[in-house]
Image (cartoon, rainbow, N blue to C red; front, side, top):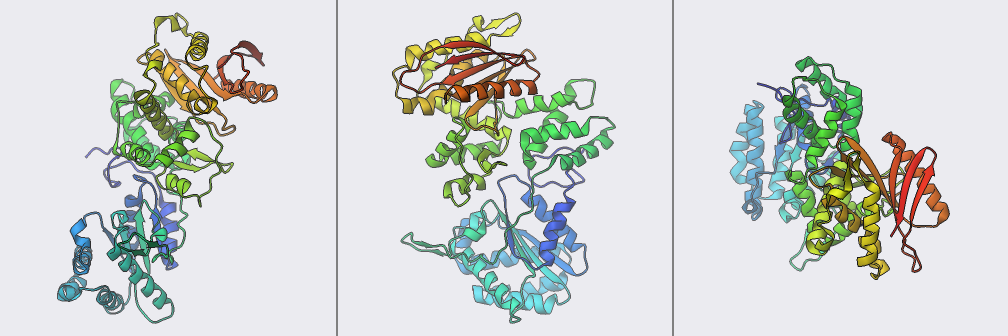
Amino acid sequence: MRRKFNDTGLCVSHRHYMVDTSHKIEQIIQLVEEEEYFTINRPRQFGKTTTLLMVSQQLNQRPDYLALNISFEALDTATYQKPESFIYEFLMTLLNKFEFLNQTEQVHFIEKQIKQITTIPILSRFITKLVRDMLPRKSVVLLIDEVDKSTNNQLFLDFLGMLRYKYLQRDTGQDYTFQSVILAGVHDIKTLKSKIRPDGVRSYNSPWNIAIDFEVDLSFAPNEIETMLQDYRREKQIQPDIPVISEKLYYYTSGYPYLVSKLCKFIDEKIIPQREDKNWYLDDVEVSFNMIVAKRYTTTLFDSLTKNLENNEDLYELVFQIIINGKNLDFAIANPLINLAHLYGIIVPSKRGHCQIHNRIFEQRIYDYMLSKFLQAKYSEVNGFGGPEFYTDEGLNVKLILQRFQTFMKEHYSNRDVKFLEREGRLLFLAYLRPIINGRGFDFKEPVVGDERRMDLVITYQNKRYVIELKRWYGSKKHQEGLDQLSDYLDTYSLKEGGLLIYDFRKKKEYKQEQVTVQDKQIFAVWV
């Protein structure tokens, strides 16, 4: 069987190219050895299921451990209607796992008692007997995947409460239970509400407050991505520049496991087959990035990303202000909205403690989605300004684009209120730009870490790049700092020319243009 880069479900080494995460697994097993209970809560398609599998496999290779790796994914709504139904399905899942592990004695033990175990207290006593009498020489670890669908159900909370009580009793020498329990899902189970009442009033006393914080980083660092590419190189007998390619993959994905695999999959299955040379090159990563952010391409991860924004107006506005308007927001995890955005994998803290979008792929996808939503809902008159005059034999005429947009703003939006322009002004330019480059080139928003008040757009056309910075007017001193910043940024792309679009929200502003020489760069600036 030909191995491939996996973008669906579980990763297994004999079928898929995989990152060497052995040091992460070792950290998790150390928590198990320390008898900790914890939740692996990470966004969707972040490698949680694969991680549980690898942890359980390693534990089951040891003579002193028995790891029961199960999932609640298959449990339907009816299962949660009655305690006996939920308990029966849980025990049947354990029974199946014991059968798979060739634990015949434990299978018979469950079969004899399963019909009599109909309440949570009886289930508790069953677990005591199982651990104390049936597996006296082994440390039993319970791993439960896909717990999210259970988190709003009282039966599940009662189940967690029972595990919590047994954990506390064990530590005082008064009970026997699992050495460690690991739950996996998107949500942090420690924050679950312990009571669900018909009147909607809920208590925040979590039945899982015994769990420690899970701080193992499941994202892939560049040196970890290298291990997967080295495996691929050995099998394909090619000689790519693995460190450079790994850094570029990380640059676009920030180590999001699914996205790393997806970019590699595009290179392996879409890009390489189109040429005789089967080696990988740095430009292949950029082509792959362009493919994954293409408007015609979607995945369940991107669908989920959009759905989460569509279903929560406050979340949408938070992300809008970060992506479009470059708001400098402190990453305060105690803020429920920021916590939710972090839970979904949309935002992470920057090195300076601010909110930033998790990765460049998410940023580009959300940027395109918000732009499309903007045009569809309100401002279709902005669209439709593409024309041949914006192109010359030398490439894209950025100066003309900025000049025409300035004229457009003066004619159509000069009388709009400042509040509107502060929120929508940047989107107006993005909407204006889109038909000009549509079908001819590609634009992407470059995340800015150093100065959240600016937005950098990079446009590619005919193998050339063009940079336009969008910035708000904060006075002459800040303007000069902005010119220096843009000059430095142009160096990263080895460019000598750039564009600067300045939004001036003062009442007595003027629509002006300026050609400036900064160091060895030519920068054309317009005010709107």
